[in-house]
Amino acid sequence: MLHIAASQVGDSKHMAVMNEVRAQSIQCPYCGETIDVLIDCSISQQSYIEDCQVCCRPIEFNVVVDQEGESFVSVFSENE
Image (tube, one colour):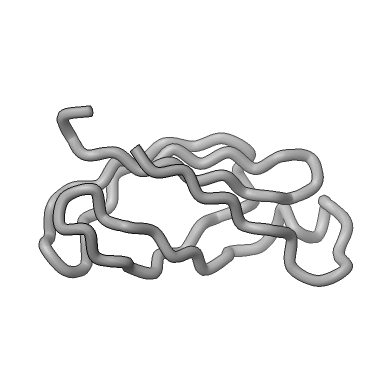
């Protein structure tokens, strides 16, 4: 499991941050490559599966966006 925190961009208050899509770098739990993904910060809590751009294996994402607009991304392999 890998946890990544992305800090708030700019001087925007949480309402403006909640309506943006943010680029985030994560490490694939299978091949270990760092890949860039887009995080939808308009949803405060979400889970979804996205394939690794390098090895094509399914990565499970858990994303939480707090009141200040900071996003926390956890990624897991299918078997974790």
